[in-house]
Length: 244
Ligand code: BV8
Image 1 (cartoon, rainbow, N blue to C red):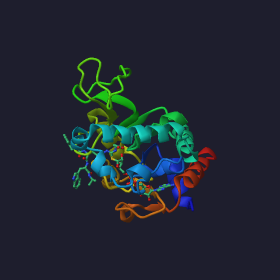
Image 2: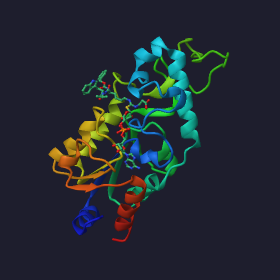
Image 3: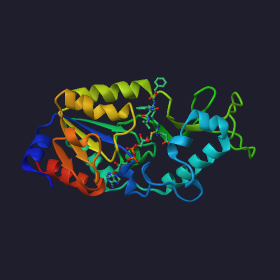
Image 4: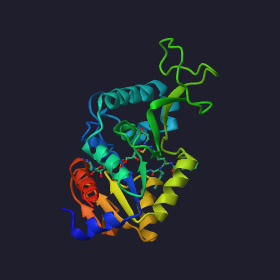
């Protein structure tokens, strides 16, 4: 699976970027966006619910969808893939972890610095003010309302059509343009602007490694394609680096 030249490239890398998508949390039991939605949500597509328009049209439906996903995430545990990235962070001179995931599992696994490009589902913000809200009076209304302005509360995630956090996005592009190795892990490379990061890294001369059971639009550009689950493959990478 890991060729000697890939191991050599990892061991001599000064700066490694790991960019993760929903696939790295699949082995923690968190469904990916490609997975068909189940049960009550089976009739909806995520792209239809994860938008400000959907929220304004059906605030209760969208709030309930996120409450269901928060439940799932709260019960989930980081898996061997998340933990392997923590080990990688400790054995590389410079390591940047970028994630499209909102489940917070990288931080729970112990990753020190994580660029959460699409926010964090366990946090709540005021739809009107955009401020983080940590506590509110629960009058039984769904969604609850902001204690400061009485606006609707929403999950602190980036919806389709919304801008990503500027600082995190800028750091992600800078790291992608300056790294030696870019690991694209568990992402369908379908959602912009995160999907352009590996192509920026490739254009800047980084070695591209794709870790995914399935092909993606990045596969053609990747010098190394490791076909399989992140939970199995990432520990192999971490071990190769630990035993330099
Ligand atoms: C923006 C948070 C502008 C919410 C998410 C037409 C063409 C191109 C682009 C667009 C377009 N129309 C609109 C756009 C832009 C749009 C976009 O890209 N749309 C797509 C659908 C075409 N992007 C946006 O709207 C972004 N904002 O552009 O704003 C702007 C600028 C200034 C001012 C105002 C506006 C915002 C995008 C963020 C949306 N929010 N999440 C929530 O979670 O509810 S996106 C969400 O979907 C995820 O965060 C993630 O990014 C994406 C899903 O992708 P993946 O993570 O890759 O997951 P997926 O299920 O797709 O794939 C899983 C992969 O894992 C698969 O490949 C599978 O094979 C693999 N896998 C499975 N098991 C494993 C595994 N891999 C490893 N191990 C395993 N065990």
